[in-house]
Length: 144
View 1 (tube, rainbow, N blue to C red):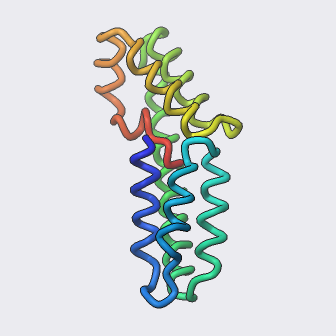
View 2 (cartoon, helix red, strand yellow):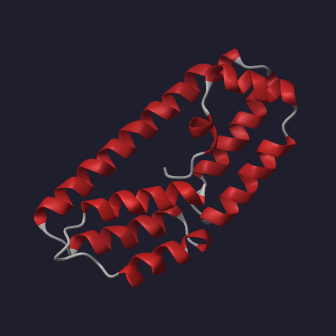
């Protein structure tokens, strides 16, 4: 899950022009402390960094954020549509996953630990039932 944040940061770095690129130390600082921060805090740090860059980079970053938001709306829609089709036990697990993902007060590391626990504590039938309708990215992504 931290890997998802790293991927997002690498995508951000791809947007950055070589003349105005932030130092490696700045990016390493954001990534190094990502586990103890909320997604909102990480996004604010990245936004502050992007604001110092050229117009083209800011526009690309804005477009990327809009795509991420669209993907999240689609993911929520898939979950909402599939929920009534699931057994009660699987519904409970899925609701716990979603509530963890949407909890803005939890750090990335806390969310990762909770989601890992949920994943490892699921019985095989629940895993199979969820896998019929949703992807691992739908279930356990932290990038949103």
